[in-house]
Image 1 (cartoon, rainbow, N blue to C red):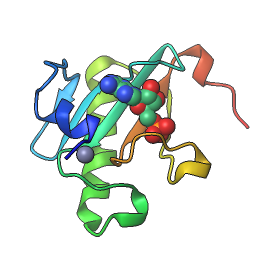
Image 2 (image 1 turned 90 degrees about the horizontal axis):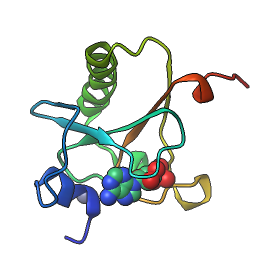
Image 3 (image 1 turned 180 degrees about the vertical axis):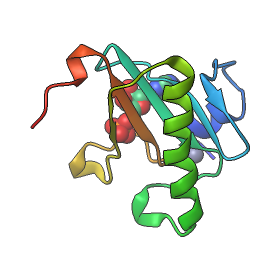
Image 4 (image 1 turned 180 degrees about the horizontal axis):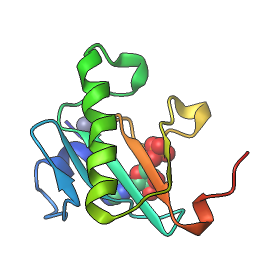
Length: 108
Ligand code: AMP
Ligand code: ZN
């Protein structure tokens, strides 16, 4: 399958994982939009939240956010899931953005 995140998970690019367990891998966004910008990516291919059937995977994704931020000592951060092209989803393999650091903190 021609999915960039599946290839990353598969180790094709020797990407360094900030955090990893049986269900998810976490790596740096290639085009960071905040001082800390990480992507939490399930190891199974799911196109987007719209196609997700495994409820437990959501728990794994958010728990991995907690574990990752704890590991790197990031106390304040935002999480974001873009779903669908119109919402800005560019990579159609479900992922949770972690955005941290000063630039990510202003609230709406
Ligand atoms: P989204 O717009 O929610 O689909 O987010 C996709 C994110 O993946 C963007 O922030 C991209 O910068 C990031 N991205 C695309 N290709 C790569 C890659 N090869 N390694 C790391 N991040 C990537
Ligand atoms: Zn994939």
